[in-house]
Length: 445
Image (cartoon, rainbow, N blue to C red; front, side, top):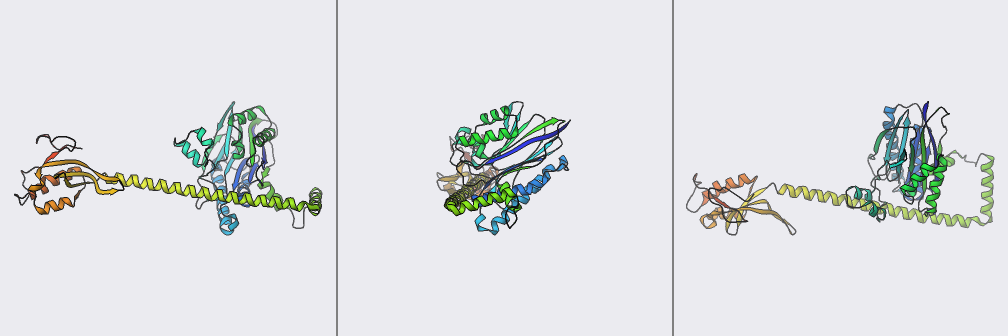
């Protein structure tokens, strides 16, 4: 017996969007799902471009050890392609796409993932979400700042932290190698499905409906019945161990399918009789007044484009602000920690004193605190030069060095002694309590 894949890909524009920016691909050795962003034109192009870069990998000539390298290279090439298109055409500014790609060789599956599209695995009746959403809200959940229930209603739940094509440099991918276990069923889906349809419902359909195509159709139907607020795409594949002939042929859906149809159509019009008839009917409908509906569709598409572009810019602004806040907070923490490695000698309450930190403030925050004071020598016993020096503070690298400075240098500048006296020792006092006896040693740490 040989292991093979049984698969299906389905996509729907949903009930709200004017165009489908999702793309899906299912083949004997490769499954891909992409959810585009950046307005109807940008999103359509982004997801279709990613499919075009990945689909040539659908072949049985690859070894398991090279799967991740092949996927990684294809995704990075797609990313650079999208960045070039965005830079050369202002209308495509902000275009990007999520991407999940699963590639098979023998009994191994390699997967790369970026964005908030998801991969689910149904194994022995248990459904597991294999991928982690690269969203701001998911970050808040993982760091314990939001519960899973709060995340579902969070106003920034669609803010993506990682996608293809929306930022310079290499894209950061989640990568993994897994066993292709016979009996496993996989679902790749866009958030147009995972958002309105619960995980329990997804599990029920995947468990109950045996045919991958029928299961994908039912899941899309459920998402539409829940309002269909976004494009909906599902790629389902089963790992099977059978002597029956393996499924062949690729299924391409969504924006990638439309772009391929346009690329295959000759400049002088459609080539098949059915396509010619469809074009003729479309032409007749245009002459009978259907142009008004086309204008309405164009206006709706333009409005959707502006809305998506505004959301993209807001996401960028929010992400940039968050990065800046985190960077500033980190710098402040590191800076404060450094200040607390410093010490200085000065005066406090008319006494010689040692402080930890630096003699500065940051708004209401003091960057130093009193460690200990000395009842001897008193300030009155010090000469004018030493008193002035202590008022200006004397920095020391450690508490031990600060104590040594008091017990040698400061004591040496009493009004009665011109140079340091080996027998003269300062007596420290804990600022939180009474002065210790001379034999108890320095306190206040």
